[in-house]
Each structure stands twice: as C-alpha cells, then as structure tokens.
Length: 241
Image (cartoon, rainbow, N blue to C red; front, side, top):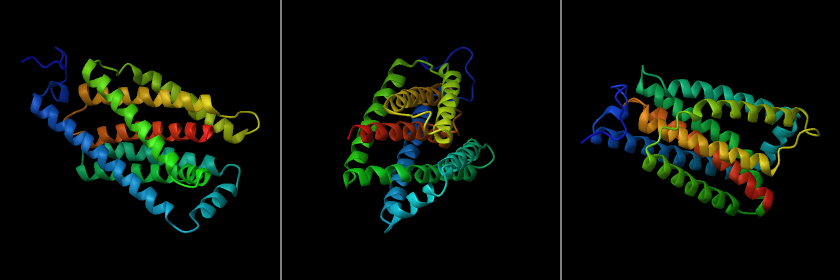
C-alpha cells in the first residue's frame, strides 16, 4: 500500500518515509511523552502552590523591581533555547530527556504567578480547570485536522517566527512602558490563535519531517504549543471572570 504521507522526494530517514508500524510507534511515543510532560508539569504546579505563603513570596519577588517580570521572561527564553537544543540532540537520548525535563520545569516556574493569581481571584482552581479543559479540546480538534487532512503545515514556520517575535516585542514594551502599551483581551485572543497555528505546525512536523529518533523533541514542540495556548486561554478566563 502506498504511504499517504510520503512524496517522491521524502527524506528516507523521516517518519513519513517509514512503514505504517514504525510511524504508529513514533506517534505513540511522541504523545506518550507529551502526556508525561503535562502530568509532570501539573504535579510541579500542585506542589509549588501547596507551599504555605507561596503567594506572598512570589508576588513580593516580582514587586521588587518594575523589570522583575522582564528578567523572568529573559531567563525563561534563554533556558527554553538551551532545553530545545538538548532535546534535539543526536548525541545522547539522556540529553534529549534532560532538555524536555528542563523545559517542563521552566514552564512550571513561569506559569506559577499566573496560576496563583487565578486561584486567588476565584478562591479555588475552577478557572484553571476550565482553561485546561478548553485547551485540551482545542488541541484535540487541531490534531484531528492535521492528521485527517494530511496537509503539510510547515509553511507556517516562518510566519509563526515573525508573529512570535512581534508578540515578544509587544510584551517587552508593555513591561517597560506599562502606561503606554496595555496587552488586553484581544492580545490574548491573538496569542491563542498563534498557539493554534503552532500546534498545527508541530503536529505536521510529526507527520512529515521528524526523524524516527526525535520523539522527545517532537513532544517538547507540542508541549510548548499547548502551554502557550493554556496560558492565554487562562488569561482570557481571568479577564472575563
């Protein structure tokens, strides 16, 4: 049977060029690692949020300087870049897992202030659960689109990078000039759309472009996209609560 994902010019080492059973195993490993990353992320957040007085500690640290959040963002971007390089390493599977682990831990830390604010705003974790549920539904829907259409969404890569850089620039400007630029509801909506495009792009890469030994890197790409979507869906819920 002809491979529906392959092309006459397909790289013979990519998942798309492999038999059905190899492709299925790669997809299972990728989504299994994604599920594990989400579970570890949730456990880290639950542990951090259960620390007595964690809200006061976190908010006091961020309030020490108007540029505290800018430093946190810069640190997160640096750690994310390193973690992605490790996860895409061909030298060691252990290095790949280290990259994924570091990235999940970094996401948990940068999410903590927002999750604490969401919990404090409503007095429980209902907003967090609602945002998580909506994120999972959108992720499943986008994944179905990518797998059923078999379309290669790699053309989104350049556009996602440009829009992502613009978004980072706006975030930095909003921190440096808080009275001049305010990132409200529509910015969050735009970021959810960006995350949706990133999920399609990452899922398409899983189908068409990753090598068979890159399931750790593939799961990191998906986790990053899901985390971005969850972050801004939660912000939307908080703005409307």
